[in-house]
Image 1: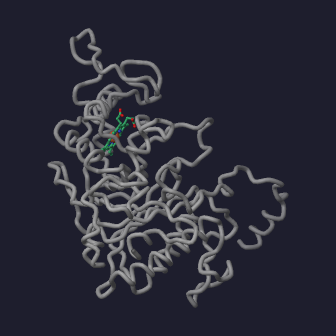
Image 2: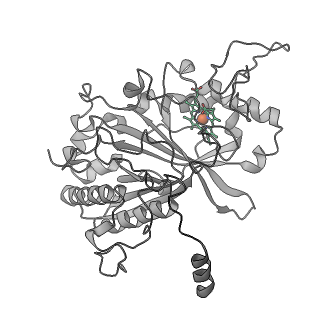
Image 3: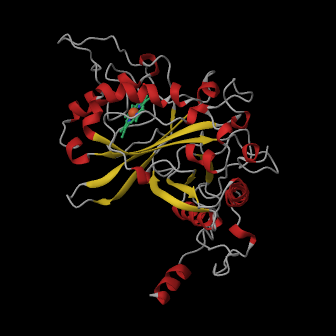
Amino acid sequence: AAGGAGAYAASRPAPATALTSVGTDSIPFHGAHQPGITTPLHARGHLIAFDLAPGAGRKEAAALLRRWSATARTLMAGEPAGGGPAAGAGTDGGHDTGIALDAGPSSLTVTFGFGRTFFDRTDLTARRPAALDPLPAFSSDHLDAGRSNGDLWIQIGSNDALVAFHALRALQKDTGAAARVRWQMNGFNRTPGATPHPMTSRNLMGQIDGTGNPKPSEPDFDRRIFVPATPAAGTPSWMAGGSYAVVRRIRMLLDDWEKLSLTRQEQVIGRRKSDGAPLTGGTETTDPDLDRVGPDGKPVIPSNAHARISTPEANGGAAMLRRPFSFHDGIGPDGTPDAGLLFVCWQADPLRGFVPVQRKLDRGDALSAFIRHEASGLFAVPGGAREGEYVGQRLLES
Ligand SMILES: C=CC1=C(C)c2cc3[nH]c(cc4nc(cc5[nH]c(cc1n2)c(C)c5CCC(=O)O)C(CCC(=O)O)=C4C)c(C)c3C=C
Ligand SMILES: [Fe+2]
């Protein structure tokens, strides 16, 4: 087999240029905000939460964030981890595993967050933001505590699956004795370049998902998504430029969903499946006409349609930036796919983003019959590290 592979390689001329720029694209580690929040959806993602080890406190946490930041900066630049040679076997802990050898940075981003419990474990309770108060319980929750929350959270995204896994391994190894994995989840999105022109991604129900997201070009985008550079009274200064991530593992009951006719599926969401346009017509970017009534006297966009209920206009302006991954963790014993959405949304304040919208969805969303919220997390994601700084330094060292 090895000879065959060699002959195959030898028979093909080396391409003069890469087929796409997917491998060479890179995202800066330093900046006012952490990467991975406004970065376009990644093809591959890993979410991982850790708890500090018994006996580990603020000192160990600071050293860990310093190590993690150094690794994130190095890998996001497309360099090998650990300061060692790229092709090392990794047995002495100082070498890169080689998993991402040959690949460029592939838009890798690494984003770090703190969970509510982190602050008690590090004697920083006085500096915990009120926005980290536990999310309310929702009637449709089926939450698994073991796969929820955590002291520390990392979101890894890349447009190459090996680059993403490489980062996951390197960051996990960085923890040493300071922290233990609490839960870990893997997700994916469409590969850049798979469609003839850039499009909003689809989820595993086949819907175009992300249309109504706030756009960075909108005047109130920063105010909605990021804590201001000078935070309002009650928000600690270390959260300047930061954001709050709500993470929900939402299982899709795909066997039930796929039994619905196309018309019913579109009524559940309030948008067309083919192109994401509202049921009142136009294109994906046309505003829905929520007041339009059909010949039967009923609203064209049903009163319980997901997109009607979740829109900022119906929620006192509450908005969030949804940046999810799909997941598929195999087929369950009953033959149904363990698949759905790793829903990750970003906002300056969860009480003016996720919470009011989920409260409303919980009461009357037509989509509820086809999904199940199985895990949940809320994390404070500090602003980006400046040159020479590590993520979270303003919390841990002042
Ligand atoms: C609490 C927040 C939300 C959860 C949880 C949620 C789950 C969820 N959504 C879809 C599919 C779609 N959602 C769409 C729109 C939409 N959803 C939310 C919020 C939550 N969704 C918002 C704020 C919006 C935007 C509303 C607007 O501004 O008009 C859409 C329509 C297209 C779009 O705008 O993205 C789809 C499709 C699934 C499958 C799901 C759980 C698995
Ligand atoms: Fe939604």
